[in-house]
Length: 178
Image (cartoon, rainbow, N blue to C red; front, side):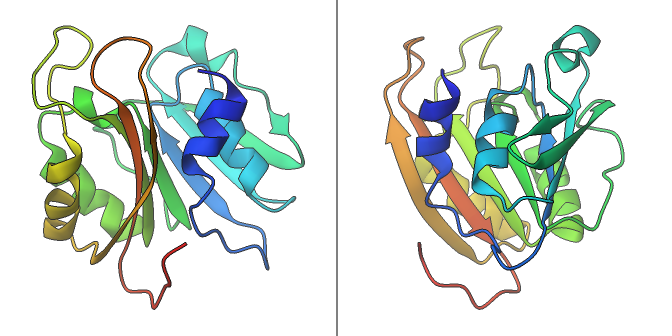
């Protein structure tokens, strides 16, 4: 996926454009969605890009379009820094068996979560071992306290694991749908 395609998938997410934001991306890989998010945030914002693959983190730039990107070599199961304005989970939640625990931890550090996942219920080892189909996303995030869900977009997957969908979840905010 290109940065432009990733950006178009999450572009409808509501970001606070009036001030610098601090976002966390879990499972950033080489940074495609990190760069896409950076293009949506105001200049002066910061993204903490987390991945357990040190080689992948080396491909993530330290700055993209006026947004500083700090990398952190860690696993999604480790303690999360916070507070954050939001957390991006792009193609990572299908690797997490205990989604409820992770989402509860995310709800403690951020009011917004952006999700990008394959819309399939069928496990596809080794790439999608614990799928999260679109119809299951809102109830799962609601259990963690995210009381507002918005479908941001969807697109065909190049890998045949079902289409990709993007959703935004918020809690504790009076937000309008994008």
